Length: 455
Ligand code: ASP
Ligand code: MG
Image 1 (cartoon, rainbow, N blue to C red):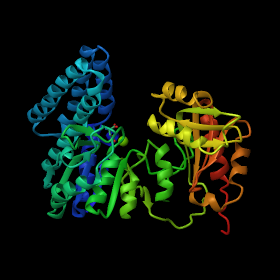
Image 2: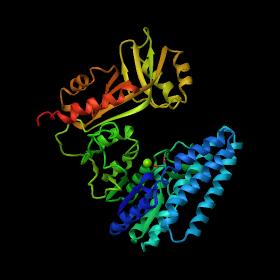
Image 3: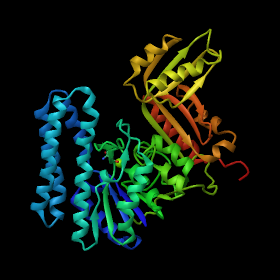
Image 4: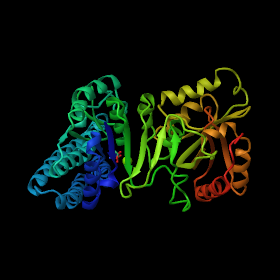
């Protein structure tokens, strides 16, 4: 049994849909469970529609839905024999969507998370039905399984799956199909709360779905089909010389995941790691390319730094207190505020009188600053970026920091941190410096790679 997950860009056009159906048919003997994202940019369109509806633009929101409908039909109608059936299917979803948007327009804030998730769920519900029909048409024994009946989330719309009930449902609703040689086709991203409302695993959550399902059925491999050649040494749109990595470890992948929205979702690999299931990142346009295999532990590859990644839109919060910083309990008091306001902290650095923290969500920033000001002086700066070198050999290799700082000599580095697992080395810089910094680091580490200690 394998899981094959396809992202939106692998499903955006008629050609892409046909290509994907062919990839699945070629692997039918491996009993694939297929997990699909919404087609193309459907989810972005749905997010925009929800936003319009929530801000007094219901008519514009409906126009947006009409545009999504046109895009879906333009891609799917040429490849499906039963076009009238397809139109009925898409129209039924668009009608439901219109009703949900009207409810959003009329709703108080509290019910919006529920209604938003309900609206966003249509993208994957449609794409999975389209793919199941397309595979059936090719003569495959394909069945559609509503992922909302399988994945269970908590009641708070926080994107956390409840693994116990989810695994029980995977056993009951998914595994029997694969065991009988049927291709189960499911939407990624979508779920249902324990109370029975449609919910989601958060943007980009289809990879997570694939990983949860793969872990649940004990798959031999989880294949994440994308539009890139694998996990790259750097973002190829910034570094033209970037190249795919044949193999990375789970630890490295988890570090990369936080930054690499382009390839893997942050939480994606965890359920797979726990079951020791290999995850392979592949290119649906170039299936002959080997892709990147993510494994529990990988042999030394000669590269100390495997990949250079970055994340923009970072805010640095500086907390300063001459009296109290090193008094015990002070850091706890600071973190308690972040915890209470449900704001995750990524990079932390401390000095005798100050602690700096980075956050990527600023929706509670004003509250955060207000609360922290009760205990210390606080400043914050937006428009920052984290640039991160990832590689397990970093921990045993002297000179990585020296090489990095030499490469970045013309760039102002604001914070530095080496994670506790020491598989990463992170630098916080101004967003505007990202392209120069990433190119300089790539040149320093990949054009003359630093050898691991003892190699
Ligand atoms: N369609 C969802 C999104 O765009 C989930 C996914 O593609 O992974 O966020
Ligand atoms: Mg995606």
